[in-house]
Image (cartoon, rainbow, N blue to C red):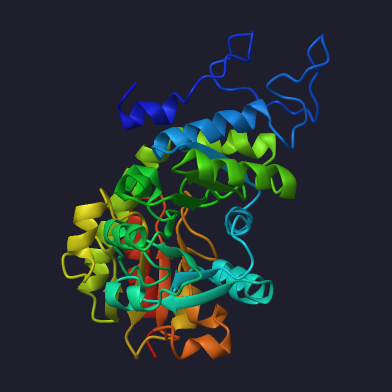
Length: 378
């Protein structure tokens, strides 16, 4: 099997099920029998390994063209485990607009426990290089930033990192391996909040990591077992279900997002649309070079005559809720979740709305946003 869509449906087989199940079974067992001679088999204790989790981990590694995959209880658990492979005193260059949960983990936990971080706009390679110190170990960023969808080059940053003997860590949540495979562009570690597009149904919390080399895989695998923030078998099965439909869901969500973005770009009550699928977007050309789709997330800045809170509370198809990448469409006001000390440098205002597009009918989504804009006029 060499084609991507086939790999989504048919992951690497483990040959563990004697009943001939087509869907990999959920092995809901905490322990497994030893071999007759007392030695260990492939599985002994489920924190260390589980057949259902092994299937998922091998599949995501295959999809990302990596050495090994690892499944965690959440996206931030995945990030925490990756950062734990680095020694005290390590310095990281990080994207200047990371997901709020990532930012909190780095700056309110790891910064108090021996690691240091310098936020830089990853689109500015000169600034990235200027931030390198003798103790710098890695560059960590999101290809599309959250929530303003600024596009950074995985290839250029990976090349710069390698020239300085640094690792490149990419959060690939928004794009998934369907739209971008960062390891193919030179990255060393790729991360996913599988809660989002990979899981895709809004019914689980999960994180995934894929490493490019056996050396990194060994370190992450040791800490996955040692720290123990693993993904439970049932949730592993649900993530596998999401992977099987990833392409058809993202195709629909991206098509919907493109139509919504084009509609909103022309609407007088919208001051700006942030979406790399628009030719007017500053990141459009780079996105065309390094990705195969713009995904289903966009942000807008409402005109001053629109009450943003009334807008998000006037939608009928869209739910006013956090998260993204699920089958239903959501709206969020990112400004109001920012700590006050970060608001002035975030590039956000109370008029910014993040819009996560789902699988609903395209026209229903457009009509819903149009009526909400009318309802929210001051």
